Image 1 (tube, rainbow, N blue to C red):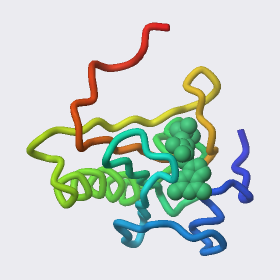
Image 2: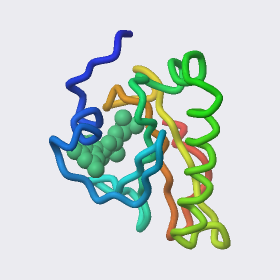
Image 3: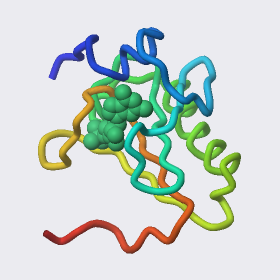
Length: 120
Ligand code: 5GP
C-alpha cells in the first residue's frame, strides 16, 4: 500500500490540523487521541511517511525505530503510567480495522484495561 500524504496524521504533522501534543523530538510526535478509549489515550507516530508497522519495521532507519520505542516508554513514564500499568497497540491492515494509514502506536492507561482483545 502506497503512503497517502493526505491522511489525517500527515496533516497534523504538517501543522494543517491542530493536536494536543504531549511529546516531540526529531523523529516522533505524540498527541492525545481525539476519541479517547481510556483516561489516557495517546497516539505516538513517526514523522516519516510509513503506512503501518509492516512498512515501518521494514523501511525505517534504526534511529527512527529506536526513537519511537524510547518515546513510547518515556511518554508512559511522564504520564504516570509506568507504576499502574498501560497497554500499547498498533493496528495494521483490514483485519485490525486500521483507520488512519500512517503508522501509530496507541498508548492506553489510567484505569484497569481488562485482558487483551475481544473474542468476537
Ligand atoms: P486506528 O484505528 O487507525 O488504529 O486508530 C486511529 C485513531 O486515530 C483513532 O483512535 C481515532 O480516534 C484517532 N483519530 C482520528 N482522527 C483524529 C484526529 O484528527 N486527531 C486525533 N488526535 N486523533 C484522531
